[in-house]
Image (cartoon, rainbow, N blue to C red; front, side, top):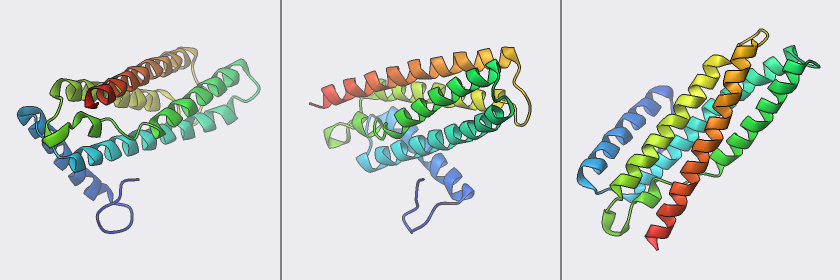
Length: 175
């Protein structure tokens, strides 16, 4: 969880203020091509924290669904979806950098790669939110919804692979 400069977790309102400030900083960075590593590290932390939090919420819903559908074919598919989402969660936990790597010496930023990273992360967040909305809270899952959830998880793996490739490219260009 992202922490304020004081100690302890930040509140929802503080979180919103931080996100707004960082969004403003990112827009300024895109416009000027300059940024501080400190700000880019904060962006990395906020993005990672938000994705981890949303994935945990999806896993919680899947866990309930798994209990309802235990010992059925649907339950097996939900279980496989759960395991895949755990893998996605582990990938996200290990992806602590990206934006910081877009910041070159003397505060210069590779703007095209920064934009690509933002685009990928936005798509990842949208897919995770779609997955959350798709999973029913306390009932059995419909075949169509389950199939769509499986497709979303596969799309998430593809996006995370693209993100990892972009980060590898950023590392290569930094030298």
